[in-house]
Length: 195
Image 1 (cartoon, rainbow, N blue to C red):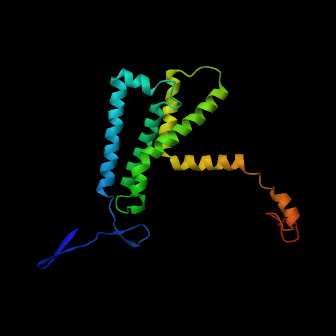
Image 2 (cartoon, rainbow, N blue to C red):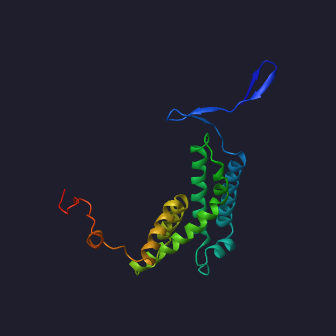
Image 3 (cartoon, helix red, strand yellow):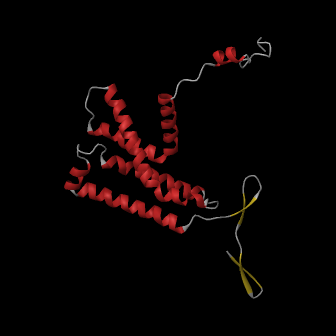
């Protein structure tokens, strides 16, 4: 924002007062981040057009030779681009420059977590049923890929918890720890009686 004082023009940062009443300097979303987001949308749209118009592309991208169909990667990337735009809108006045790289690689992360979620979900569905998945049943895979691409942070936390459960030993129970350490368990006083 430019403000004139007499004959001299001075650049002045816009000051925003947040909910706590603190003054903060406003930092807008860099234009290149917004442009990159729109470029991702254009690429995804072109891939969708190629999918719908070009039968050879559709046959290759959806073939059973691929472990994960490209449509799953597409939906994961779309979810990631969608949440990226959400972040740009929510933080349009308080942009954190540390997030620039995150927004640049977001579609790749969305595609990766979409693919992993597809494999996990496919494993669970195949373990639970003996019937083949129909075309309409495949829509759930696309939805899962989109949602995980959109909320990959939640998915990563879930994967971390599952990995920790699989590869670490169970912690001792609270009562076993209290008995061996001599310290009271929650709800007991120093003498071991209930408080």
